[in-house]
Image (cartoon, rainbow, N blue to C red):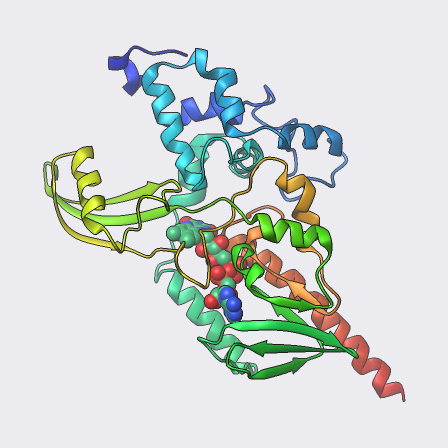
Length: 339
Ligand SMILES: Cc1cc2nc3c(=O)[nH]c(=O)nc-3n(C[C@H](O)[C@H](O)[C@H](O)COP(=O)(O)OP(=O)(O)OC[C@H]3O[C@@H](n4cnc5c(N)ncnc54)[C@H](O)[C@@H]3O)c2cc1C
């Protein structure tokens, strides 16, 4: 696998990635993750085997295979890992394995699965259409209203906001992300296992910056997207945008005309990017995070079965919670109608 520096071009990044992360079980992850939407509960692989792999960090795997890599390949691999928004040590290999399984066990599928097809009018149009549909079906809503506590008493759940407003319901579906949940008080308290998972949080503190630059391509204008790992201690983009411009210019001489970014790490509604987990987290906490707490459902992409940390995962968790709530409300109405 090792290439000389000037041969790097012969090794597309996906080949390096394939050997390093995705071939972890020698079968492109088919053996260890045959059903990515059922990682823990399938008849093809034992839970103990999954737990064994889930203990491995990306650093562990890197140490295992680094003798196969040229300096440049090792560098590419380390850079690719920034997609987790964490470090090599606190990023679990399992999230890489699951991602590989979702790409039909073949990294070149990344393009057709992730980037080839777009919504013609963009993601905002999808969100807008869902919102419109919910509104047409009687949705009432408030925005910019942070929740302070969620209390269940006598079959009723009361959600109280920081401004003191109260909302009562027979069922509540919370979409509050993993890293924000620690700011909410629950009564009755959450299980010790869920509390532990919430206190640990996830490890994705990524930076994603779009830049328009001149001088990168022969045609002049180029749009570049840069991803960075967890650098909260040394770099807060909105406080120091010049540092981001410097980084782009180190990559290639260019004039940066415009940058666009949103800092998910300092945003109080997310306190991090979409969830990537540390070693041992999935096998210890995924089922608990997905479970209900009395009459409260937790529907976040952060702990979806398959497309964790993706829009499909949000749809999966939201649909599951909605179907269960509808079922229970119908049953309740049926019981009430009989009396
Ligand atoms: C930069 C970036 C790029 C991404 N790219 C992709 C991609 O290409 N493809 C893809 O599929 N996914 C992508 N994702 C991930 C995807 O956007 C998320 O996983 C998904 O939108 C999460 O949906 P959700 O419903 O679980 O959470 P969210 O959409 O985050 O909804 C959570 C809601 O809870 C609210 N909330 C938070 N705290 C409180 C509180 N205290 N009180 C009341 N409300 C609160 C928030 O305001 C928000 O409305 C990306 C994410 C980021 C950050």
